[in-house]
Amino acid sequence: MLQGKTIVLGISGGIAAYKAATICSRLVQAGAQVRVVMTASATKFISPLTLQTLSRHPVYLDTFDEFDPSVVAHIDLADSADLMLIAPATANILGKMANGLADDMLSTTLLAATAPVIVAPAMNVHMYAHPAVERNMAVLAERGVRFVEPGTGLLACGYVGKGRLSEPEEIVLAVQQWFASKTELEGKSVVVTAGGTVERLDPVRFLTNDSSGKMGFAIAEAAANRGANVTLIAARTTAPQVEGFNVVHVESAEQMLEAVLERYDSADIVIKAAAVADYRPVVQASSKIKKNEERLTIELERTTDILKTLGERKSHQFLVGFAAETEQVERYAMDKLVRKNADLIVANDVSKDGAGFNVDTNVVQVFGAEGLVESLPMLHKREVADRLMSRIVQRMQARAAGEAAK
Ligand code: CTP
Image (tube, rainbow, N blue to C red; front, side, top):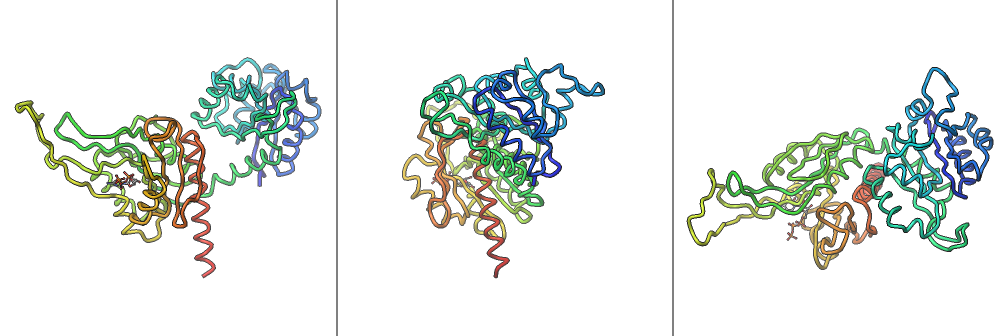
C-alpha cells in the first residue's frame, strides 16, 4: 500500500521515542521508503543505529550532516517527502512548528517541506492540556496538519491521563488511510456552497448574515484532498483563499441557485454549507435610498430554497445540507432532511460555544434517513470537514456496492 512512497519520520525526544522503531519497521514492511530524522533529545531514548538498521538509510541528526555533497541535506530530505510523520511529537517540536522555528535538523526540514504533515503527540497530561500547547496544536490544525491523538492511560511520568503516544499500529493505519484517501474521489465532481448570501437593498446597502464561509472552504479542501474535481460557490466570506479547487463568486441566493443548477447534472456530490438568505427585498433601489421619512418599511419576499430545489431534481447526486439551529436540533434536522430530500444533514446548535458562525471550530451532529449517524465533539472546522467527507465517501461506496449487487 505504501509502495513507492517516501515518508520522512521525525522523532523528537520523549520516552515514547522507543516506539518509533516499531513505526519505522511497519512502514518499511508496508513498502515505504523511510528517511529518519532524530532530534538530539530523541537519541537519548533510542539509538540512531536502531533506526538506520530498520530504515536502511542513514539517520539525520544534525543540520550540517551533509552525506551527499551534490545536495543540501535538509532541502533534499524535505523535497523527497510524500508525507512528513512526526512520532512522537513533543510539546517542544509542536511549539517550534507552530512558530516557524528552525534550530535543528528536524525543525529545519519541517520548515522546508511542502508535503502534508501527520503528527502523533506524546507528553505529560498537564503539558498536553497546557494552553500554550493547545494553541500551538490549533495553529497547526488551521494550517492543515493532521493529528493522531494520544491515548489515555498510565504515562511514563507516573500520571494517569491523556498524553500516551497512540499505538504504532494506529499511527501506521492513519498513514495508510491518508494515502488511500488521496484517490477516493478521483473522477468525481463535487460542488460546495459557502458563505452568507448578500441581498441588496440599494447599491450600497445589503442584508446578509454572520456566516464566514470557513466550514464550506474546509469541506471543499477536504474533497479536493481526496482527488475530487471541486467547485466552491462562494457568497460573502472572510475565509482565507485556498488552492486546489475552483471558486465561483456570487452574491445573492438567486445567483447561487443559478451557479449550482448550472453544475448540478454533472455533479456527484453537492454540499450546501452556505447560509442562504430566506428573504430578499422585493425592490432593489437602483440609486441610494435617501432618508426622507421618519420610518422606512422594507418589504421582503421569499427566496428560492436551493437545497429543496436540488432535492426535487435529484437523480444520482449525493446531497448534503446544513441546519443551523438554536433549539430542538434533532427534530429540525430530520425535518429538513425529509423536506429537502437530502442524503445527510449536518446540524449544529449555533447557540453553543465553539459552534457555528465565525469561529474556527464547530460541534456538529450528522443525520441520515435512519436518524443520528454521528455526533462529533468540538473540532477544528478542517477536522469536521474531513470526518464529514469520510462519512460521505463511506455512504457513497455502500450505495454503489448495493447497486452493483442488484
Ligand atoms: N438553504 C438553501 N436555500 C435557502 C435556504 C436554505 O439551499 N433559501 C439550505 C442551506 O444552505 C442549508 C439548509 O438549506 O444547507 C438549511 O438551511 P437553514 O437556514 O438551516 O434552513 P431553512 O430551510 O432556511 O429553515 P429555517 O430557516 O426555517 O430553519
